[in-house]
Length: 62
Image (cartoon, rainbow, N blue to C red):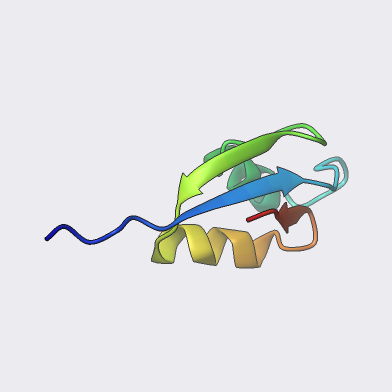
């Protein structure tokens, strides 16, 4: 039987203005860019590490 895919929903709550350029690129790679944007992603190790790097600018909804 196939393994269930775990998904996570993110919401951007902080601005990328006056942030490190890498943090701006991390948000873009997560599919975010403006405050209030929401994105549903498949949870894996690379997504977890990106969320950890910008955890002050994103909120996990579910």
